[in-house]
Image: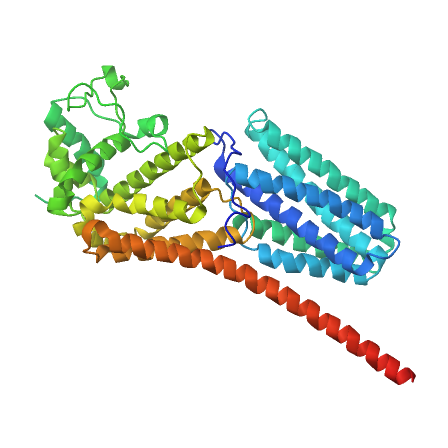
Length: 193
Length: 292
């Protein structure tokens, strides 16, 4: 057990858990948390390689936004009493390797990776928004608002990537497809495990 | 009297049971009420109608206020059966006796498995619900400022002790129950009850971890709970004081493990920094020697 007191606080953050479709919301929060955690690690990997280059500030800025996202999902996870995915240690390493690896292909490679990942994440958020809207827009208003905001942020990152010549990266379409397949697999696994 | 009945006949037998006891001529449709009446979180029997006998009157099969679903009836029978467990064990006999106190025929025991699985699972579920309620009340007191917030190790100790004390009236027959809970067909249910109880305890202890610690903490507490339960089975000291001392030591071990882990980590980090510094110094020394 970690040193008592560091992440133990009075559980005052509560959410009305009655009437919520637990399985659906559980999955949504678990996979989104995993996604933001992975995105954090990807940007960390990219910064490790390209931190001192000209795109360093841009990547740092996007990374800061992802940190905010992760913080928000940490709060939601506690409020809704959702268990985190057991694959977090794996995403920790895989994310960093993907970020560093794509950055080693150059600035455009890093941007291509960003474009691929952010596109996957935006589509994924969109389908979650659809699911929640189908269930009950009123009941899930807060959650919907958060996911919509984050989806917009991810789309912004996607556009930034395109602006910085992602499409000129070496083997752009192959790279993009491979990364997106990986994202789909990660989403599938994190929802369940 | 042990009633061995094959599953497809149980609903029929159930309604036969009720007809025998109440003289009701109406067929009793159980399934339609399940969705309306059963609450997943509600383990307590519905409010007791006047007297021990439930009333099943309804006009033409419509529900009345006293109408009860099969699940609620089963809960009431099993709750009543617990009184007879110290004498009969976790068996169909205890269930039959329980049914008798509710004014039902002993054939009601036919609604359940003959190995007493449902009775044990019902008991465990009831204990877990009671524990959750107690922890909830305690939390409210702390939030209102009427009680001190306990340190984590004491909180865990008290929660586990409270939960294990609920076994005391049934302690002689509990080893039998544990072995039944380990039967393959019971494992999904018993495991799910165990994990949700442990999760509840950590939640009220204030756990807010969202990383792998979530799993580590629950695994450690599950280990503590299970071993303490086993120690309790063999404990003959007055008021189980040996068990509580064992529990205290295990919780202390777990807290130490956490402290040790963070100590190891900071030592490791310091070591790495030291080595890096040494490497830089050596390489600078080499460069300057080569330059000379």
